[in-house]
Image (cartoon, rainbow, N blue to C red):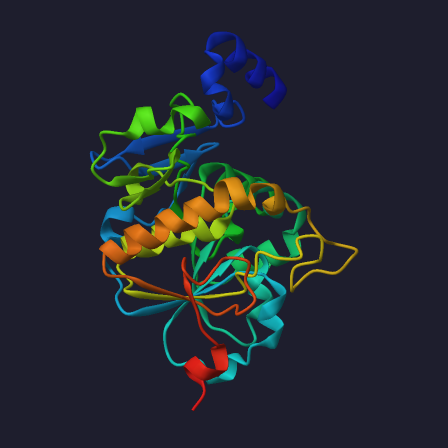
Length: 301
């Protein structure tokens, strides 16, 4: 039946709407005047959502973002002082060492292929999971809505908003250029960073870039990033083995997308009074982007 609806959708809408074909007609959404989706019905079920407007500057102080580079294995999190801990993708493998409060998953291949990790994440009632509508639909289809005990915060890719036309990658600067909440890299005008996630978040090939936009909006003023190695992309992530490793596409995007995106992020975060510390001393990102600091020197007495 879903294939039938997909064909109807394709034949009745322009190609720029193709990214919505798996959602129609199963999703009914309501937008607030601020741009964010505040109500969602999926296959007739009302899905509870965290209102993004209510979370604007809800937090303050420090947060730790746990990425998934191998340097995670060198860190003794027992010495971490009290702060909000933010996980991405498979970082939940650290659950016995870290108390996650916020979580971000925007990689649909992770949702499709790491159901073991995802099952544990959505069963955690202490978590707020930021993910896209495609992610929510996949979670409900695979696990059912009653199995979702975490809170859900619905975020959108600014260039692929629900039931709106796609913004092409080479048209980002033109399309969003007048939005006062969006900043651009002057050397790469189609790489953008938003200070208001209610109208979508910009992608740069890595979920950490999404996390920086989200955490700025939430109000944190100092961010530590663990596992942001950006090296040895052919090796498994810290929670993977050679047998269950998911592919990585970061290597081909590193110079042309990731470096200019994080350079832009540094500038916007600094302008908004946010410090960022990279706890991966051997990260391929240079220290001019985010200052590199030792985990032990920073947190151990």
